[in-house]
Amino acid sequence: MPPSYLTRQGYEKLQQDLDYLRTVKRQEVANRLHEAMEGGELIEDAEYEAAKNEQAFVEGRIQELEILLANARVVEEAGKKDIVQIAAKVTIQEEDNDPELFVIVGPAEANPREGRISNESPLGRALMDHRAGDKVKVDAPDGSFIVHILKVE
Image (cartoon, rainbow, N blue to C red):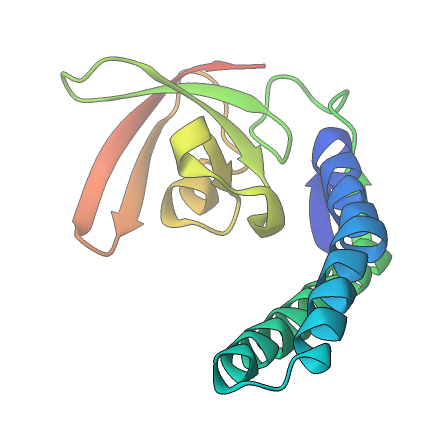
C-alpha cells in the first residue's frame, strides 16, 4: 500500500478517532447487541440487525484507520516555505474572483469546506511544486481554468 501523507494535526486527529472507536464506540455497539439479543420480539430483531450493521461499520473503520496510520508519513510544516507541497498554505486567485486560502493535505485529511484540499485533487495536483507568482492551469472535470498563486506559506 502506498504511503498516506498526513500533517501532524491530521495524524493526531485520526489517532484520536481510532482510539475513540476502539474504546468508546466498540463498547456502545456491544451493549446494543447484548440488549437486542436479550429481547426476542420481531421489533427487536430489527434492532439486532441495525446493531450488527453498526458493528461491521465500526470494525471496518477501525481496520481502515489502523492501515492508514501504519502507512502514514507525517509531513512537518517546516518544509520549503516558497514551494507548494503538502502542509503548505496557499493563497490563490482565479480571474476576477476573490483570493482563496487552501491548505494542501493528503487525501485522508481533505475537507474542501474547511479549505483543506488533497494533493491528489485536480487543483491540488496542479498547484504542487509551484511558487508564489506562478500562473497554473487546472484541468478539472468541468473544464480547465487558470489560477494565480498569490502566496505560499
